[in-house]
Length: 344
Image 1: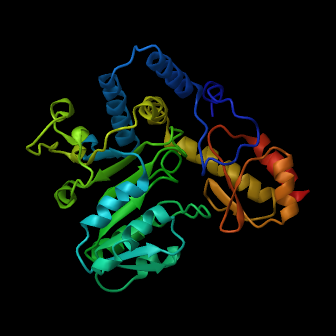
Image 2: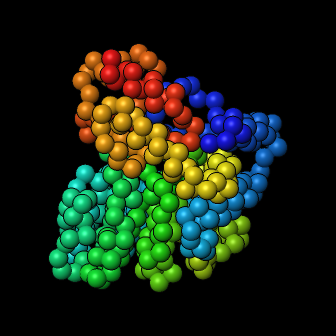
């Protein structure tokens, strides 16, 4: 990463927990402080936030490679996945990887009373299911251990089964190049690798799938012209995916616009190379083979975990293992610090 880009970040050495919470660039923090100051002094009005939402939507569409007209906004990934779950017919069959993050699992399990069944398979065999299905849902990168899905294989299997495909990019968008062509639903929460404030999420819907989704939380912001949709009937929703919008948590979107535009201006292949090289370098220092992911999980005894904390290294524990995540503000010094702590 360039010195100019590194200069945007103020986190301490040893922060290896982007898979839980990304560290914002200084430009994002400055934008949020400015709007909070304006709010405090009565200089900010509700319509002032519309431009931040517009910029955020456009930037995420550019990063993801989708038409901005197919993008709806929300606050959390699970709420957006819930729209897809509610659109399934009674008795639908859903294929998921075992151990998937529950934001991609629980919304479907909640429809068991309608006969919706969830079949969990290993990630490596996700494309090997038999028969027809209604939906295949998977995260591009697994939260628990950083494994990357074979998207072309899963996409082909879903197409052969007549199933729609839902891809959660919360743990991949911002560092992993992805071709989402042929993906019916792309869901993303942005507070991890895209370094946005919590409360900003997106759903891209294939054009031929949009009419099948009911806007269950439709409100004024889902209107064709939101500021003309604040009172009364009739229902007058946006013609495109904005009909699925929920009212934005304003201040989060100010920060999101800045962070997302930063990523829209980066070459994701460069970010991918940087992040994966650091993750694989740590594995090499530990005598382990490369995994090709920005997320690594490690078996470690309690003493090693204690040494990590004592050294000021911030990681997470997921599925009983230490999870470390490398992003564009990390460098070789973080690898050395973590290796020393782990090796004692």
